[in-house]
Image 1 (cartoon, rainbow, N blue to C red):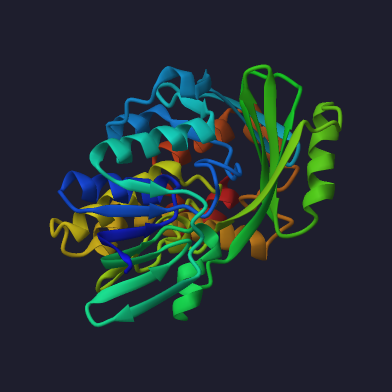
Image 2: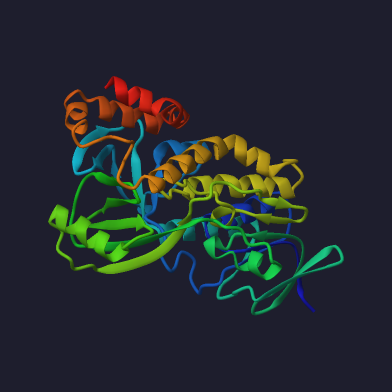
Length: 360
């Protein structure tokens, strides 16, 4: 006989664990099926969060999960630097496996059952129940897919979407820094993130990951001696519909990730909570609610990502001759601050960008 639950969540990342915690709080029995043998492994994320987002989510993250805090942000555009200090936008670099384990503990304390090394191998609908097969068989009224960009459940059901994945490669290196560095290229971006005595160096591009990360490290004088390496992908599709009767999608598999820079922890937790509320009958249309929370800004980020990929030789359509004058007048720095604080201004960039540049 299959194990019976009200809800089965496939995937034990921030999105799936947030769904599980929320529905358990509403009294539902819930099982989380995680394909790997350890929550948080393998590492697939840099682990950056903004203090502002943590407060908005009401999370009290234990200090031992935080590896580094900084207000300092350095933007590199065509080898030109814009150094920004972003109070009150404190940037937190977290130990991502510990963060996921903490979220798993919270969901378990709420009443969720977690099953590790349980890769979903079959899903079918029988009457008003879902049948899910992993190491054991499960039956449930509500099925939640939170299995990441692989979309294993959707592929089994023939419902996989084109998430427009962006490949990433990240190294951990024995090289210390105190600021978050972001490099903007037309066909992708790179980053250097402090994590105590080490740093995380990564690139996201559809062309030449290895050569690009070597180039980035060489430009900063970082020895090419990675301590560890992580490769993954993130969706650039933007949010997609996530509710299909008693079947829900959340997290990467639903495009709940910033299409421009791949940030998705906070948005996935938020979307997970909304889906959990929808299962509990508190939110009639979770797709609409998620769209209200971050859909508009993510669509704008997606349009910017698509523009940059169509015009790989241009970042914000600025020429090398214009960048120095912008830097000298601090206009680029101020503009970057505004984009970070007010994502809706990206729409103005698309509508009036060429006109603005002609006036510079």
